[in-house]
Image (cartoon, rainbow, N blue to C red; front, side, top):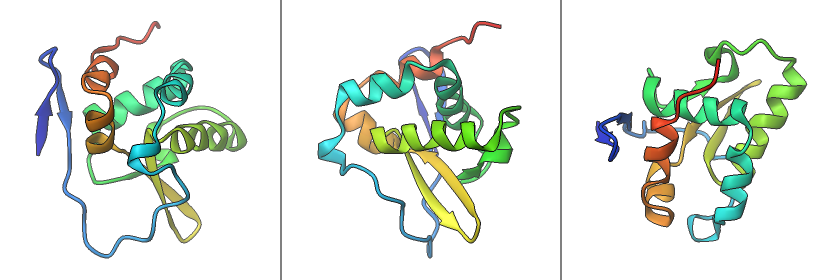
Length: 125
């Protein structure tokens, strides 16, 4: 399934598969705060992670390696944790691997239009 952002950009929303592990600790949908989301998205690397998930997802959720980021593992762990704790992404543990996806429904309900802005954002080279 896809969702068209107000900018004409198509956000991919894939169905939730059955039998997923429980998500890691995160705020409930009604507890997601705009200032926390904006703080998490203020970093261009994190904005790029969310944008890639919105526009290029090939499956329901993705491991860190899928993003092709040339950063130390500890740095990536920090960035993914910041997104999860702000309520932007949901992470699940699959053995030793954590996979992420954007909480599209929750964020669209709380902050309509925000994800369309992220999807339409063009990173500076």
